[in-house]
Every structure is written in C-alpha cells, then in structure tokens.
Length: 347
Image 1 (cartoon, helix red, strand yellow):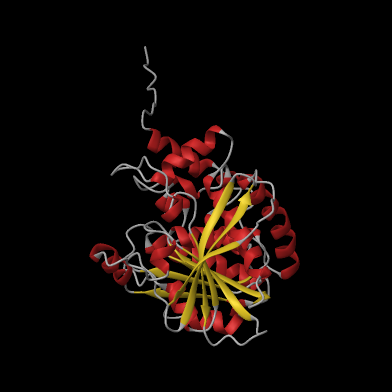
Image 2 (cartoon, one colour; image 1 turned 90 degrees about the vertical axis):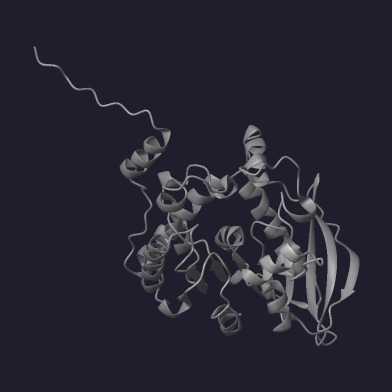
C-alpha cells in the first residue's frame, strides 16, 4: 500500500515568506507611459490610504511658542500644537537669523528616526557622550544642516519618542512596537498617527509668516525615511523629498529579518503592492533616495531593486530627472552628499 507523504510546516516565519511568494500584489507598478501612470496612481493611492486608515479627526491646533534659544546662526523655537482633541505635538522650529521681516522662506520637515527624537536631528547632545557620538556617527543633525542652509525647519517628536516617549521598552523590544500593539487594540496604526502629526506640522509651517506655504520639503533617515515616504505620499503639499536608509523591499527586511520596527507598516499593503510601488506614488514630485552599501538594516541589493522600479515610474511619468539615488559607502546613516543640493534645486 502506497504511503502518501504529507508536507507540513510549523514555522510561522516560513509561513509568511511563502505567503509573500504566492500573493500577486494586484497594483504592482507596470505603467509604461504618463496616461497609464496616472490611472495606476489614482487607483493604488486609494488602496494605500485604505491600508493606513483611519486617520484622526482634525482639531484646533492652538499653537504656542514655549521657548526660544539663540543657536548662533539661527533661532530655535520650541512649539506645541494640537493634532487631535486629546493629543499634542511638540517640535523645534529652526529659523535662520537672516530671514528679513516679511520674507517667506522654503521650509523642511525634518523627520527623526529611532533614538532621541527631535533633539538628535537638531544636533542637541545634552553633553552626553554617547548621544553626541551617535549623532556624529550617523551624520544625524540634518535639521540643523538645513537651517544653516537657509531653510525654516520643523523637527517634531513622533509619538513614542523624545518628550512624547512612553515607558515599557525592553532591550529586545522598542517602545514604538509596544505602542503599535496598543494602537491595534483600537483598530489604529501608530504609523498613521505619526503621519497625521506630520501633516499637522506641515499645516503649522504653512501658518507661519516666515514660511512660503508652497515650498515645503521633507527629509529623514531610517524611521524618518519611513515618515518621509508616507507623509509625502499622503500629503501633496510636500514638494520635494529625501528618503534616507529606508527604501527597500518588505520581503528583504520585514519578512526576511528577525527584528524590525512594527510601527511602520500599512496594514494589508502586501495584498496590493511593495514598498517600491508606494514610492512610485510620489512621482512627478522630486524624490532622492539615500542607500548605504553597508546598511545592515536595509540590504543594499533590495534597495537597488526598489530604486530601479521607482526610476521606471519617473520615466513613465515623463520626469526622469526628478528622481535620483545617492548610493554611498557607509552604514545605516545619513549621507547628505546630494540631499542639500537636491532640496535647493527643486524647492
């Protein structure tokens, strides 16, 4: 009597990898011209929005400046404003001292990654050697660098970071992972809540008399790259973006690695498309990608593959010059080699 061999699997990791392989991703980018691109963009953007929903309800921001510090070449304001009826955002705004009365400058939303929040990207080490060394090693003070180049810069603390940090983190689990678990209990996504706060920060920038409301860029490293990508995709007011240390493929870093931040994933996205497809939605607005050859978090081969897909989208949209990649020798860090010129060119 023949014995039928049963094929069974007990590994949940293998389960997800195999599911990825057999999921068709119905909105993977395939357009070849501008007309096809616009049809695809309209339909896929709606699916991405559905994966992020629900967004909070708007509220009166009631902004307040609570501190002003002289940083030599620029002023550093600490501001607070509401993003929901029961949630406020705290942020630094860096204002170059040479802004003339009545002048409106281009502005940049500087999105921080994991770590100390807004202080890190503003180069504030608090005299702590570990923090100072980390900022230097990651070339992390890009909010400060943009301000020194003449931009008005806003650097908010995202929920779970800086002055908005909640307790409960362990050596093996980030606090943002813990807060994502709590958000899921209410049918919410921490990524969505932070993107909402980013959009409220843009609204605050537009309300300022020293900001040109039509010239707003966004830039960030790591989780800041996540925030830059999804904020730019969901908010057309962002006119130019720099995504650093993030553009990759979910099968490479999220499904193929043992640990990653769960607070940066649109729920159900892989039914429709990959991360590269999300980035394609930014076209025709200018987009620069930074990818390090030695990045152990986001493997370079997957970043290259994703970037080439986005490059094809910009070609189909008829604006290939509005997409570029800064691939550099380094680790999981901010390059800046092309970023500042890129923002100056397009913003």
